Amino acid sequence: MVSFLITMGEVVAVGASIFGVLYLLICGWVTFDDRRSERGVVRDLHRADTDLSTALRSAKRQMNRAAGHSWRNPFE
Image (cartoon, rainbow, N blue to C red; front, side, top):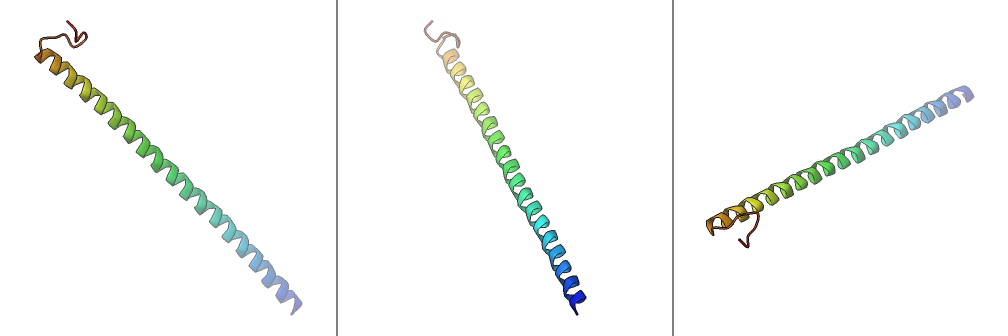
């Protein structure tokens, strides 16, 4: 009977250890995945900002050309 209790205790300890390792792995993966998706959002925001800046420069250039000015020097 005593050897059975020791065996059950060992089984519970091993099971708890496996559960703990799996828990830590899952938490680590969730954190990694959150950070990866956050980096993707930041990258998309930077890309959108760059695209907007390019579009604004192009619009300014076109407006200055339509007004007869050089786009580099709007005071010509």
